[in-house]
Length: 174
Length: 386
Image (tube, rainbow over all chains, first blue to last red; front, side, top):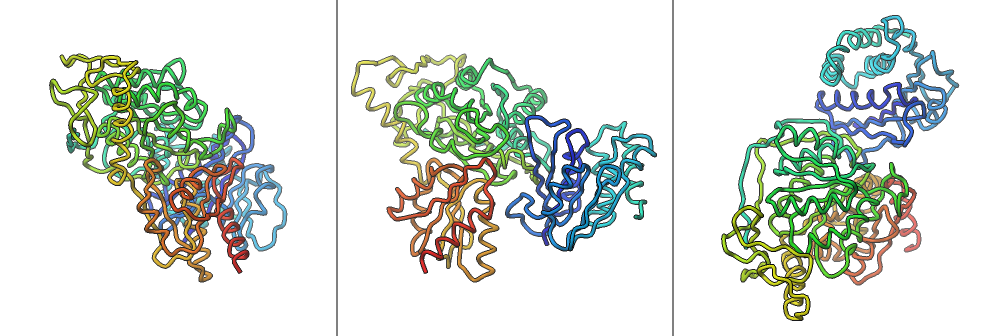
């Protein structure tokens, strides 16, 4: 079973970080994982995306072609990728940053990630809120896998705020 | 002469990691015993250099950022002759600058490892985009006759494994060895397993033996290091077994060139490696390496699900090319397709080896090879054959 995830937004939001954490959490969950990213010469502020493939079997082509899950954190990125989502796929978008458009065959979830992150005291962890809400809904990895991976990959000073962001994402019911 | 083999505990903590290809290359080098890195930063290979700064500090090795790439390769050759296991990492534009030094490493038989994370060229091309345009350059880029070894990883695990192997081959054959990766694999993150124990090969050495000639039919002479007390002269000009310049002597030149080339050509079956996937009943054979081979796997499943028998032949060593493996695998196959991220390099080698018509499927848009490129190419081929 192969699942393709695409995280998109603009440089500086922690999009590639979210993809990396998802991939690493997949490894912790004993899944085959591959993570790739768009690399531009101008990262901050311009469009960027990270693809993650998770599978119970060996991964052939390691890049995302038609995402099963799209996590969008900017209007530009949402508009660019919404039509690439597989029929029957799921979209998670930051409702503070994206106005969604009706798309047939795709379930869309509005996550007020920026607002939730602002409420817990750091707007910059909106990426972790988005990631957590997606993980909570899709169940690709467990909350523990995600939390442990975040703790392992972030400076100790971020442990508490990341923990709060994970709780906010998991606690949110749309 | 024959190299020596030792087994050591991995200096990289054994276990499971989620690494970028570039990071895995640095870790593979450290596992191999690399203790010298000279380089100049370049996308998409810079992450190797960054990781080596830290790794060499942990392992008491030496790291030097040179003024450019020719400086880097020359520093490596010096380090190699001082007894180090030396490495650099670069990409197309840097590789072009290294070509003079490559010839010097070849004629002085200095074991060095060059990781080339290929990007779309020519010239500065597209720095952040993949390509496979350097396949011929690593083989023929410097002037004169010589041989090198080039390995082509298709996964992050293989970047680790083949970087380690590159050091071993460089030591055993006293030859420059390339890890010919590309941006798609270099910037890909995947699971990597670091083993408890690694095998290291070390250059042959016998006190008093000439450093540039041998009676051993394998053609590999003893390699002393400066400071070891041996009589040692190293020159890029034609030299005899003891290293004395012989720039007017036909017999010395012929003997040297024949040995430089022969030590690899004669060992081609021993060095070259390939893998096959679903080739037993294949009517259509894809010959692909590196990232293009990964894309081929998806194309194969798509065709197999429709009953079209497609298989994959994957050279792991590009130089020397696994000719015997290809000849055996291609026997009885109706069509051969060669997808690659250049305008036809390995496809020509395949044509040369098989003496038959093949279909090249070049993708030169600076994107990683897509399964769709291969699927479309094979569908056109089937359509034409009907």
